[in-house]
Structure formats: structure tokens, C-alpha cells
Image 1: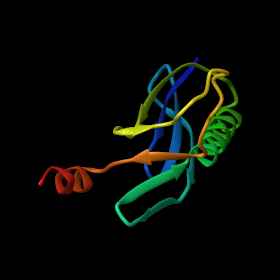
Image 2: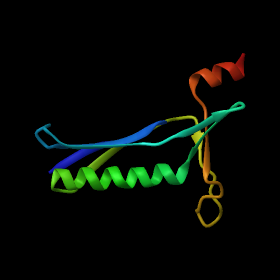
Image 3: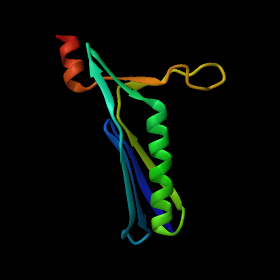
Length: 106
């Protein structure tokens, strides 16, 4: 039985799978770019979603079995706008970091 973690970060995502004995079975990582400038910090939601699907598929293939459970962590202070059909209204996602949040509150 495999289980693992999926970390969706600001510069890339990673999936690591473990056996029920705690042995690491597989790890996959994909980087992606963000756009910064003129007071904005954005990420392409579609690029992130594609990277997530790739790391899940790769880690599962390397482990040789699908995970029974996955814990997900993600960067905070972000949002993706959806329409009534639950599809993305905008391709880019707004993000903030601690430095930017501190600057805005100063």
C-alpha cells in the first residue's frame, strides 16, 4: 500500500510516495514560472494543473502502484476565479508573499 504527499508551491509542485513501512517509493517534481512586476504576482493556473497531473502520474508509475491516500499542501494567499460552470474565468491566479503582504500593510 502506497501513500504520499503532493506539495503545490509557488515555483513548482512535487509528489512523493511512500510504502506503509515509510520507505520512499517515488518522487516527481515539475517547476513552473510566475509573473512578477508592477505590484503583481501571478501564476498560470493551467500550467500548475498540468504539472500536478504529471507529477501524480510519474510518481504512481515509479512506485508501481497507485496511492491509497494523498495529503495536499499548497501555497496560501492565492485565488483562482471560477464561473457558474465551475470552469476558470481567468487563466492567471493572483498570489501574495509575506514580503508583498508586509509592503502592502506598511
